[in-house]
Every structure is written in structure tokens, then in C-alpha cells.
Image (cartoon, rainbow, N blue to C red; front, top):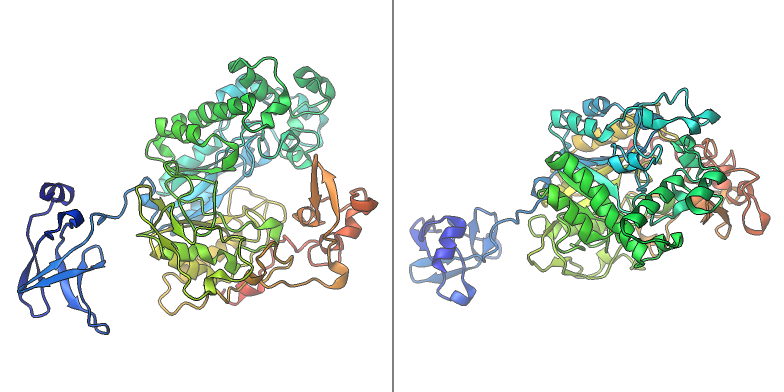
Length: 615
């Protein structure tokens, strides 16, 4: 046992420290070997209020002591050292998440990583979560892939084609032979520019993969029903009935999905097959598609970029084969830090023992703007970091339920409320991931910068990591037209947050007084977390109205994701839903010119009242 202590910490057997009477005493191991303790050099002191004697170690911990005759023994358990996980470099750091659409489109074609690098230079940003696949989708990517090219999956990866000439209005675009054009490695260029400014890159990937296992074929970018996908690259794809009949004996399809599933089925000798089985959890075809994503897609990119990628953030976790995905990364990049979006949100915890290195840190679902990110329902993530063990959280936590939508009343104000973790061999770094604006990558700024600064300070001071999801310039409603930079108002918000760090005075925002105001209210049991600002009577949406779009049923909240002034808006008399009522009548908040959501709802030119107080 003595030998273990010496080898583990490389210490001598006896240490000395100064006692309160300035005499020197020896720190020796305790004699109880079943509860053996290793000893570090320490200083003995008496607490000024409680008068309790303590030994202060270099780890900044106070531990119990044994006083016997002229000796004082300081003791500490074996778990002395801070856990060294693959995510240790994120401890106490801040980062951002920045997304652009994948595939072949104007955004990827013109993306210039040097521009965002200039914005991030000399900022307190240690890492960027950047998309290797399109945000919230797995059907397109920002780097070439040989199998996608082999299968003729058009516009799935960036190509150096003239997007001014070939655009959604040019009907000839769908017949352009993209395979003749050079590949653009957008992700690789981004890695190069971030390395120059000493910023690490975490790759965002959505595990639903090319077949869109979460959202379904109709939501793939090249399906005829996906108007947004059409404008961001789908117009390059010939998805006419004749093509779909050849691929799957149907009139409407997403050619990229059909080609991928056909290839996977042949590779795994599943022939003939029922295409619908692709989306049946546990079916042979479903398992094969998940395995192909892990080994062929994730494995290829992990091998190609190797240690240039500092970590991965996998989204839509339940739609992938977690074990195979993580194994594919570990084979080629064993030091990569991994977060896997699956499991309970609040308190933070290790939801994926053996498969994650830092928490996915997802906020309470924003539900298309109904639950602003600055609400008190997300305060539990801050408390999680502060009650972590040196910045790390574990699987076993009290309370064990998910508080992100479980409590009718504010749980953080209950008497005796405290988050506690039980240490084990699977530490996960406490990582908090919140949007800087109303939605993940769009919407207006809502944060009070003082509250934002406090939350960042408290999480990083506890040893956790904090990531801001930021909108880009050039997105719907954003300022400017360059998708290569953080939208200037958001960058200004970040600057104002950084100016206030570190927080040296008393915290102003806690569990009761988050500076949150929701224009569309809150959903579920979250009303205590963010007061609602009700629109005037003539601007209130009909909560019972629904309509069908791209094979899915939606309501006004979904429709109002983009203002009526947007080119992709569905605020039209032709958009009919419940009882034949059209969108303009059912959703006046964003479809009526005189209502606040018509153009300002997601306008990024306007600064919120909460923010202006601190600029």
C-alpha cells in the first residue's frame, strides 16, 4: 500500500508542514489500511468562524485531520488528482458553435474561413463546434466523401460550381454534371484557419445520416416537398418521377436517400428489401444503415482528419448506433473528446457511460422560440457545474430525474435543494451549450449580458466549459450577406459578455430573477422560468390550428420560425389547415403586417430591452 502511494504521486514517505504554533509536524499515512490515505504537503490552519482545524492541500481542498500528541496527520482519499479525461483541455474554457448548410450551394461555395478567423483572433474562445454535416440533418456534408461521389449523390458535398449561374431559378441546374467539378473541402479549410489562431475544432455530426432516420425521407434536401432544401442545393438534383421510379418504384423521392439505402442493402446482402424498413427501429435494414453511417461516414472523416479534430458533438443520438460510432472515432482519433446527445438534460450528468467525455449540455427545448434560452429552467445547468467534482459530473446524481420539463414549480428554490454527484470511473466534463439568440442559429438577441456573463463565469470557474451557439451573417433575417462571419450584433453581444469577466462582485441573477421575457410563452411545466408577454388580441395565434407540410403536421409556432417577410415564408392564403382556415388568419402574430412577428420576430437588427441595459 505504501508502494502504491509512492508510485502514484511520486512522493516521499514523510512530509512536513507548519502548524498553528509554527512548529513542524510530520504528515504520515493513517494506520487504518482499509481506509488508506495518501499524504501531500499541506498547511494546517484553524477556521476563523467554526474554529475547526483543517489541513489545506495544494489541490485547494480542506480535508480531515487526526491530532495525536505532537503530531497532526492530514489525510485525503485516493481520488486526489483531478480526473484526466479526453475533454480535460475544455475545463474552464469558452467556445462557440457556428453552422452553415452543407452540400453544394452558395453558402459553402463562397465560404471563407479566413473571415471568421479574423473575428475570433485574440478572443477568449478556445474551441469552435463547426459542422461537418448540416445542422439538424445528416443528408449533406462540408467535405468530400468517395462513396457519395461513387453513388452519384448530387449536391451532398460542396462542389466548385458557379452558383450565380446555376441557381434555383435556372431549370437547367438539375442537369449540371457536378461530378465534373472540383471538390471543396470546406471543413478542412476551416481546420487550417483555426490552427493558425490556436483555436481547436469540434466536429458537429448528426447521426441520422444520409437517410434522415429522425426526420424521414420527405425532409431530405432533395425531396420535392422540401422547399428550403431546394433553395440550398436541392435544385441541382433531378428528382422527377421517372428518376424515382427507377430508384424505388415511387413518383416522389429523395434520390440521395434512395441511392444510399440501395448501396447499404447490397453491401449487407439485404435483397430484396422493403424501403420502409429503413425507418423501423431494430429492423435488419435499419441496423445496417446505422452501421454504415458509423463505419463508412464517421470512420472515413475520423481517419481523414485524425487528431486535427479535437472532438466530436454527435446530435440526434437515439437514431444512431452509439457503440459503433464511438468505436469508429476511437480507431482513428483516440484522443478526441466526444459528446453524444442522448439522455437527461438537467442536472448535467454522464448519460453515456464509456461513450462520452463531456456532456452534450443541451438546454431545455426552445420549441421554436416559446422557451427562450435565458429562462430560469436552464439555471440547473449552472448549478450542476458548480456542484460538480472539479468540473466533472457522473452518472449517479441527486435529484435523479430530468428537471428540464418535470417540475410545475421552480425546483431550485425549494428548501434544501442541492445537486450531488457520486464519483465513479466515468467522469464527464460539465459542458453547458446555449444559444446566444432566441433559436439555435437564428432569432433575435434576448440575453441580458450581465446574466450571460454570470452564467459563463460560474460554469467556467467551477471547471466546466461553456459554448455559445451563434447565428451567422447572411441567414434569414440576419445582417449582411456573407455567411462566412458571425453576425455582427451577436459578435458585439459576445464582446460585452467578455468585458464583464471575471465577475468580481456579488451575483445578481439566481434561480428566481432570470431576465427572461417570452413573446410566445412557455411550453409544458416551464411557466415559472420565463414570464410571458401576451400579444394583443388581434395578434394571437390559434393554438389549435395545424397544417400539413412535407408529410408532417405543424402549427403556428413552426410556421412563425421565419417572419412573413422571408422568401421561404408559408404565410400565404394557399397554406390551409384545420377546417380550411389559411395561415394568415390562423397565425396573425407572424403573418399580419401590424403584429410584432411579421418581420421583427426573427429580425437580428433589433436589440432587446434586456440587452441594451448593459451595452
